[in-house]
Image (cartoon, rainbow, N blue to C red; front, side, top):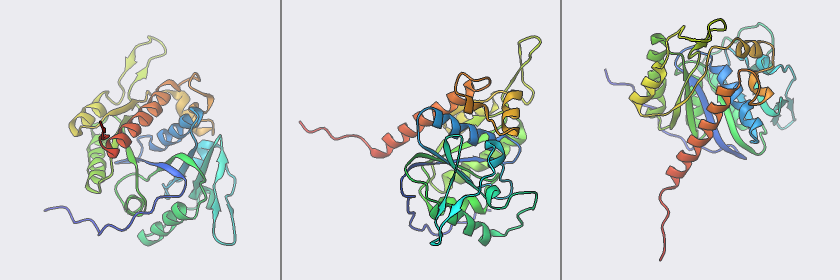
Length: 279
């Protein structure tokens, strides 16, 4: 059966002041997508860029926990929302508006409304990069984002396991179907360096993310190792990228951030087309 046709394209209005909107996505949950999004945003900030982080994972808004922030965004009478400042970047999340353990039981139209509000009402100011942490899968939030604003590109996060890779292919196909540039694949939990023998141990496999990237003709943006410090950093509100590139466990995350910057520059140059020389 052929795939259902996409809804008619609406006019996509860019977010004022935002130069690049980068979606961080995954085909399934549990692959460390939010960890990658948070550390990517922080690494870009430490590299000198102006960065915002929009937590669009409405059902699992974990960005505030990972950034150690419980501040409430300020809103004005004319419904403008000002993002929270957290560790050098601007951030908005449903986790700040509805904290605690109460689940969000929302249908498609409600999700559409809140994502529209985050995109249109939040006063981001001047940003080099707005990182959007999407929910897992290929659902309503993804379609709302894609249909509402021009997305510069998407970073797809996976682990080397076969189950995760089966779903990451669906995510890549979704972005391609709606004409969003797939910047590349990040293989998270790629390998583990044994502290006793100092040899790599491929707990979930290794290199399958690169193979999938080659299959689809997109780059590998990074291979993030299994490092307890990365997990502890997210759990305690002190992500490893916040300590700088020389910090423990941060090297591969900064390499990924630089790869994303380079890929965005290449995409921008390609979109601009060849320059015409006049003799």
